[in-house]
Image 1 (cartoon, chains in turn cyan, blue):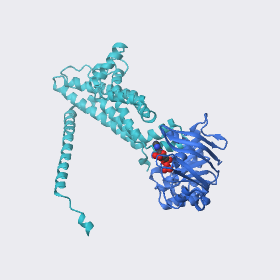
Image 2 (cartoon, chains in turn cyan, brown):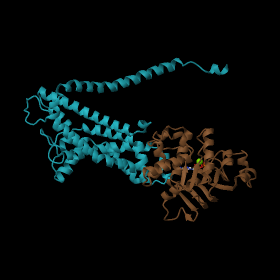
Image 3 (tube, chains in turn brown, cyan):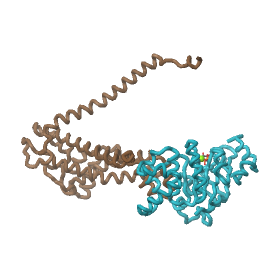
Image 4 (cartoon, protein in one colour):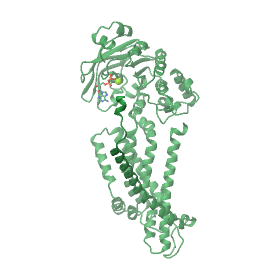
Length: 294
Length: 258
Ligand SMILES: Nc1ncnc2c1ncn2[C@@H]1O[C@H](COP(=O)(O)OP(=O)(O)O)[C@@H](O)[C@H]1O
Ligand SMILES: [Mg+2]
């Protein structure tokens, strides 16, 4: 009986606090979702108008200022190539840096130094990355504007994101698994390659996709490095290229309605590409996960 | 296959903290040796010095000698990786590789160390799973993830994984402490079978378990918290449990402390 006496109903004060907190949480959620949904809604509504075969297969070559038609094929190709090249540069470097920090650094001086610089790189404004490539690659080394120069700038932006997310995922891998592997007489590097990285694989893929999504929409660094063109240039190593963000930027600056429509559709295409890449990444993670076999 | 281990005057450190001091003992081949003693006296630490797993921890180091028959495990040219291949280990908490199937878990040590044909692997995996008394429970689902097994099955999977690389010694750190009584019994039976082939060292908190499975027992103790752990005495298990020479051993076994 005495025990029962000690158990009380929830007090009015706590009920009120709970209610207030609940309302605040939902409100915050709504505030966060409103811009997201409205952006998506606007882009889809305005972008669908020109989302057609011509848009996906034609460039802007020989399209006059007031002409309708034309497309973003050159920009789509450019974006895909630039992002792919940037990933090819940034993902291996970022991955290996994270492996060093987690598996070999032991919190020593070098690893703290690297950590510090990765933090700084995270804060580098994207235009500074573009300026750096412009100054170093194009002006000092005398290379031409090219998709590859853009990829260099983008890779500078990707690298810290890949390092940080991979680092976090590697730290989540329980030490017991490493020890289990060592105890089987497996050398450290094989343990990392065959046990640690596969265990963290899904998380690493997600991190890489976030990095890709981040750079796919960058405009400023491209402006300074891949320049600008209305024609199709499939070679990312030679001559100016286009990119979807540049395309949207260029078209939206024109006064004609047909150009504005093209800009919306360009934005829609960019969102779709990033979504598609995400989907592919998710498929890869799912295909690799043990749950599939289970 | 099984070999004798001889330890002489061994100290182990974590950074500047000395965890165990002056340990000398002989571990007989084809027998089960049990380590008992209160928590924190350095049983796990000592066990891990026997296959050079201790030095995996940053800042950890070892002084003294461990000989496997005529080889000094801490000699200058000895590869710790090959030591661990020769002296396997089973941990307190079952730790199957989560990304691998049951088959791949058992084959992991082999695959990660060299080339084997599919039929060779099939043979060794079946043999090891039978050796760990797990074959009948998993033979129809070798492709399923190892993490989907029960705790006791996972621990036997880990034992199968350890014996698949054909070690000469098997170290077990409280292998049953996370398991239910039935699984514990299954593993104790298994240990009695495995000692035909391997030299087995087992750390246990469970006095009955030490009495049931081991041939020889070593009792460790520490003078006070923060002091290094020491080997108090080591003898035939029956002697340790009925007629120990040291007062501390008797007190611990009769449950007066620890
Ligand atoms: N990773 C570690 N880092 C620092 N000290 C440790 C570590 N592991 C164990 N120790 C210390 O070493 C001593 C022995 O621990 P341990 O070997 O785990 O004892 P037992 O297995 O007998 O309970 C304890 O004082 C413990 O605090
Ligand atoms: Mg222990």
